[in-house]
Figure: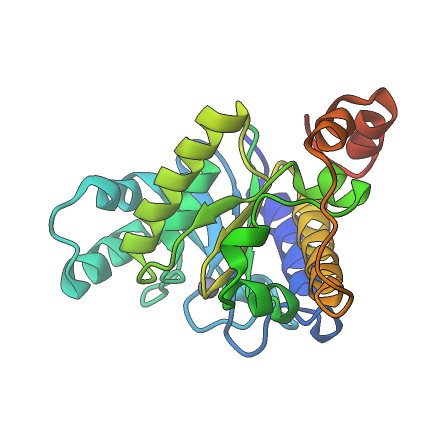
Length: 255
Ligand SMILES: [Zn+2]
């Protein structure tokens, strides 16, 4: 079991970095972050809290069990969800987690996943909100993109936020794990944003930063005749080269 205060400290630092205005990943109340404490509970951003400049008060500790029951539940009316969220909260009376709490609970159940950072980066959303997003989904542009974000993101077609989105994310992650035999590092949600799925707080920040850089480069290529994606053999090679694996470990990635 991890020390809840220590986990919270790392989560606050990670969230402040993701919320830093210079990163252009969120404004106002956009985005949400979480970190696992133990088998029973996790920290997640409180409803209404803002990532830019967030402090420990901006997070609530919640129990997994009541929230995970929503995954299978037939009744996901607003009233039922509200009751379950109230039941799951371990903090002060009246506190509520972010509406994306089920998505966080599901992702934190994956092996080696300890931190989740969901943002709406402007550069990446220019792609996720475009007509051509599916054509660029499987293309990678440069070695560091693969080192930090993997061979491909998991893809989630637009879905209503909250429980429906969490269920669709779970399906996409399962499909990804069957196809690539590992968990994703980055999840792209159509017309919505990015989810960094990470072993460490540092990894979540790195996945997000590199996703934003790759998005900016991709957008730039469309001014120069379009992207020149790396050949599949080069992409595969970059995931197995000993020096690249070493670099991934140095960047905080757990392989
Ligand atoms: Zn969102």
